[in-house]
Length: 310
Image (cartoon, rainbow, N blue to C red; front, side, top):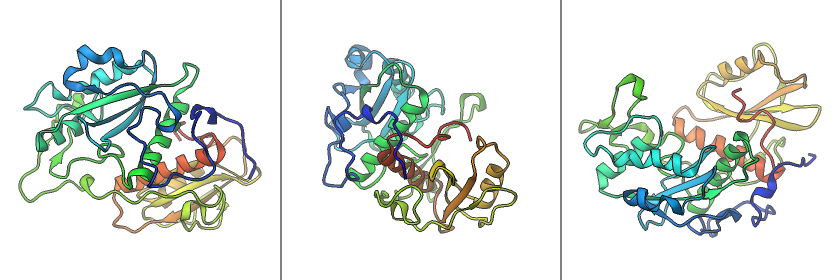
């Protein structure tokens, strides 16, 4: 497979000779992944200390105050101060869970604070002003994978994960707030995190990232795939490359939709990994993210149609 130039120089100090290992626990350091992370800013002192955050777009991470694990990793094309100011408002109404907008992680942080009393702090790292949304989303995916490889599991608030004893609020327009579930009920989004996938093979190989991929088949008509959950990759057979990575609770339906799309005139094919019916939505998203990040690790760019509303 041919390597393609891209934006691999974002991680200026990160070597790409092998995948991360669990012994490399650096996700709290000020130089994690070669980025320049700010000091930690407590949300309860955000107004006074937000000037410590870089002034432009970038990526950010959230942890419990003085904690040794991460709650959330995100990215923004606005200033880090603006985006994290929205997130800091999870503390604004202690008796009411925030809505899912303007920041989707706010209800989750509120639930963990309501359940445990913990509070949180954030740190940001700038990205070049020339980088677009696709680049930022790819960097976010890579950081999430790196964290999963170092910590052994996901952050508690990415991929739709939520406190098991709470139901998440919907968007403001719905006026439907979440809150603590009745005794005896649990939220499936509070289920376990799947172990991280590790770099193995090449993006078009049958054993890529340690999974067992089906043989590629032409993408047209009604794809031969199960009506169950799984991961898939859309491939350009002529270029021997992966152009899109996804996940679905119904592989047959999702691949049938993709078969109707314009893939830029390439000879498009599909390959998939069927997953057990009991796999949870956040677990599918974890492995989808690992695949996107693993592709970036190998190719120094995202698949050409990734983060393009396919």
